[in-house]
Each structure stands twice: as C-alpha cells, then as structure tokens.
Image (cartoon, rainbow, N blue to C red):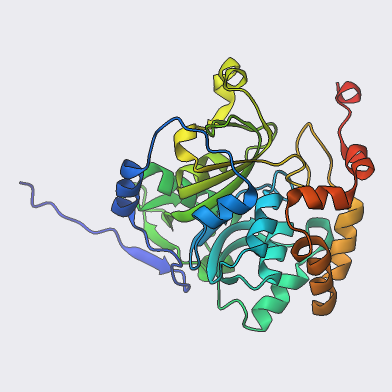
Length: 331
C-alpha cells in the first residue's frame, strides 16, 4: 500500500450553512427501492400535491424566467396545508406566490425578481421581516451544477464560478487549491431534493417527458429529485413519444405524478405554444408593491379558485386564445 498521502488545502469557505444534507447513500437507497413499473400516473394537481409533498420538504421548481413554469402545480401547493418548506431554484412568479403564502422558511436562491420589472417586492418584505429565516446565495450556473452533482451521485462538483464574489461569501461553497494546476477551484455541494416540480410540453401517461425550446436544468433536477411531479401541456399517446425518443429528456421511471395542464405556465409562456400574458403580469407586479394588495391578488387568483380549470375559466377563452402562437405565421 502506498504511503504517499497528501491533502488538498481549502483556501476559502462560504459563510452560509447547507440547507439540505448531502445524503448520497440515502438517495441511492431511495432510487433503488423506487418502483420502475410502467403504470398510469395521471392525476390532478391537488392529488399530486397531497400524495407527494409533505410539510418540511425541500422543494425545487424548474423554469427559465417565466418560461415553462409549473404554475398550476404551484397554485395547488399554495392552496394546500403543507408548510415549513425549503426551496431551491431561480424564481419569478411562482416564487412570489409561494413566499406570499408564507410556506417557505429557507431558500437557496439564485435569482428571485420580476425580470424587466426589477427586484421582487414580495421577497424583499419576507426577508426584511424575518418571515424567511435563511437565504443562501448561489449563481444560476452554480445551482444547476449542484443538481448535476446530485444526478451524478457525487458529493460535490468543481467549477470556476462565484470565486472572488459576494455570492461565494454568502453561499455554502468551498474553494480549494487544485492539486493538478494549483489554481483556485470552487467546490459546489450536491443538492438533493425531496420533491421536484417541472412543466413540460408533452408527456405520456407513464411520465416520459419532452420539452420544446429551452430545457433549463430540467434533466439534472429530475435526476436529483426523490419525488418528481410533472405537469404537461398535453398528455399524448406513448407511440407519439416513441416516434422521437431523442426528445425524451425525462424518462418515466423518475416520475411519480403526471398532470395534464393546458396553459399550465400561465401567465408565463411556453415555446411554440403561447406567449407571456404581459398585461396580467404588469398588474401582478403593481399589486405586489404593498402587502395588502398582494393578498388581494392571492385571494382573487389563487385562494379563491378551486383548481386549474377554474383559473382558466376566470382568465377567459378569448384572452387565452389571443396568447396562442400562430404556428403558420411563425413558420
């Protein structure tokens, strides 16, 4: 046996705590025991939340700005009785609804804002009031690679990000001196989720999923989630998925629930399907300037509606059809 041992020096540590333990063996045991049966997993948003999301869970939501956000699942979660959640991801409209509902007490945050409309007033109030007890910062790339590390089954992944920034300082990352080059490298801890929620363009009833347009970190997050809830613009026949197997980003055996949700990203957009409802979004941003108006919005558009079908009825067929992308013109 060689006695040539050496250690890799840690040169910097982020000041924030890890919100989720790095339980590699626990995840392996979980996936080993998870059913791989090809069974029909269709259910409603409410059934998916009730069966698979529990108080105290660590939750991840996958999206790209307001593109392809699982809004129907988000509203069902807001209306549910679960509480004391922790969350990771970048956030826009869905994060504001969840924070306004008071369900989160800690977040691994990359970005929560209103894009061209600026910083989220909902997040600012929640942090400044102490409603959210822990905020740990990461870059967009860092959070994606943390999911990738979890998907690979390794405790961390090295990257050249966040170094020398306050984002590193307020993260839970560490930096080492690379044993090969001597350069400083950031180590990003793997991030395992209790529950992941992803909205896709189409899925079959078993959970094989395809995404049109930007896929974000859907593939990595799906593989980092113990329980995975999928909402889909369309539930299609298995044969349609098999016609283009190269498009299947998330295979069925990772998925626990499949929910059909046309306009499931509204007021956000879906590539090739519909545009963002800018008029509604501007109204929402204006409402969130005050806590009172935010709760009025929540009563009108979330709490006061029993399900996604009721939401679409409230928005109105005429408005929804106006948002549809004309495929003929687009081509």
